[in-house]
Image (tube, rainbow, N blue to C red):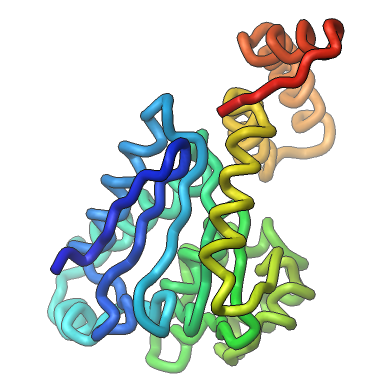
Length: 258
C-alpha cells in the first residue's frame, strides 16, 4: 500500500499521509514522496489548492521508530542532509505559489505539528492534539521554531517549544495555529468546500505573489518591507489576473478564477 495517496478533484489536489499503522509518522521516503507530489502540484496550472490530509486516527506523530534508530547511527553530515530534506519540504509549503490546507484529525506531534504549522490554513477536529514534543527525547524543534515565531506570538511559541506539552485544538486556535475547528465526521467535507471556494473566488497569481511577499518580508525592517511591498504591488498590477479582475469589476461581471 502506498505511503502517500494522491487524489485530484478539479482544481484541488489532496495528498493523504497513508501509514495509519505507524500513525502516519515521517520517514525519509514519505518526506520525499510528499515533497515531490507538492512540487508537481505547485507547478501545474490546473491545480489551484493543495490539501494535506491523513488516513487513520492520527495526522502525523513525528518521526517513526525505525527512522529514529537510523538517526542514532548517522554521521553529522548525514544528519545535516536529512534535516535539509525536511527543510526543503517545509519551505515548499510556505514559499510555494499555491495555498496549502492542513486537515488535522488526531495527533499532530513534533515534525507532524511542524507540517501542520507550515500550511497556510489549518482545519482541525475538536479532539485533535498538537505538540512540539522533541525535547522529551532529547531533540530540538529546530526547523519549526523558525517559522512558528513568525506565525504566532513569540512568547507563546517559546513556551510551547520549550515545554513540549500537548495541547488541544481550542488552545491551538487561540494561538493562531488552527484557523477552523470542525467535527470529525464533517472535516473532509468542510475542507474540500473551503478549498473549492478558494480556488473559484481568488486569483492564483494574487495568492502566489502574496505568499512570496509574506516570505520575503518576514525578516525585513519596516522601511525595507514597505519598499518590497510597493515593488510587488506594481508587479501585481501588471499581472494578467489583475487586468482581468479590473476589467470584470469595471464591467460589473462576476469572475470565476478556477
